[in-house]
Image (cartoon, rainbow, N blue to C red; front, side, top):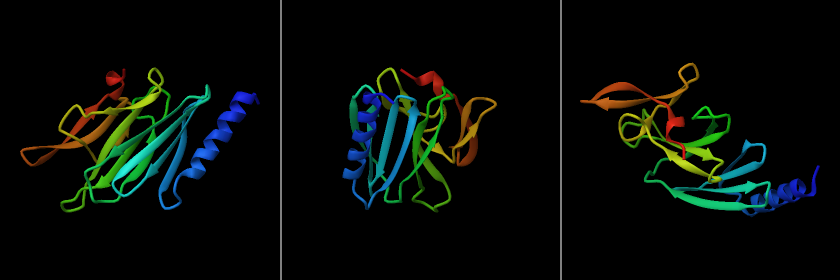
Length: 156
């Protein structure tokens, strides 16, 4: 194991310990040289990106929901690198999951927002591996309709 990789691991652990114990924390590796730790607070999500090169980035994303926020990790754009989503139950009748999907871009070493091809937000997301698409729901004249979005088309 190289000294750079060991330093990277130690830095990751130190920064992770600094995160508050009251928060939900999810860590994952989008690729072999990157580690990401996400902290869920009441109304926001913050994340730290640790690159093996020593680069560290952090961001905070504020959500407009009073519902509990949840994290899911998956490869939403089918590029072989892990991404994450944040979802919460809708504030109406509480029957739909509302998602925001964040795609890892190694080019900019950060996450970018993914947007649905139909409607304003991702609702009840499912992954269609055969079509390499995200299947969500949107409403056309109050009727639920499936929407297929291929997120790899939107990457910087």
